[in-house]
Length: 194
Image 1 (cartoon, rainbow, N blue to C red):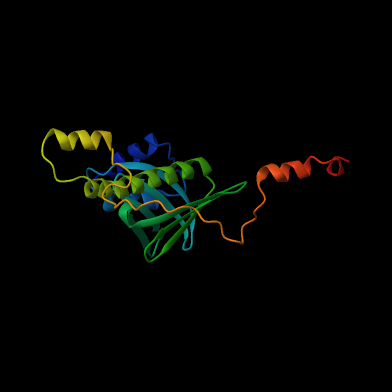
Image 2: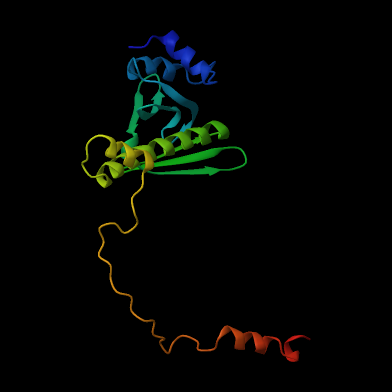
């Protein structure tokens, strides 16, 4: 378990200052984070339940709302995120994080930090989605052939699909039959150049 000083040093390295707002949430982080988990982005703002802290680590996205009588903790793994939407306005920005069964809406006045958080989440989601696709596309080979395919990431288009013979194009009566040259000659008449 990380100590409070380690967590505060890690957050100050990211540029997060918690003089008044966010102190209870930072204290709660020592119970939530594991020893080898790294915080990558952190900011404060509002969500449906009130004021909270939104942060990303190398493993998950966390929303922490610590009040005197209750604690609200949202733990969202990157592989569970289906969609991330970002909206910016004049004074604040909002992110919508959609999972299979819920939508997390978070608004903050720190637009630049929220945009960085959204970019990080999108990159992590894409990394996790591309890993299974690469393992499915690669045949089970041994040694250098597998390494060559992984480094090149070359999969020929239409591999494994049967080739169908080309059928001649047939014009259907609903399409216009005038060619482009006849349309241009009509447009070049003196009546259109007034």
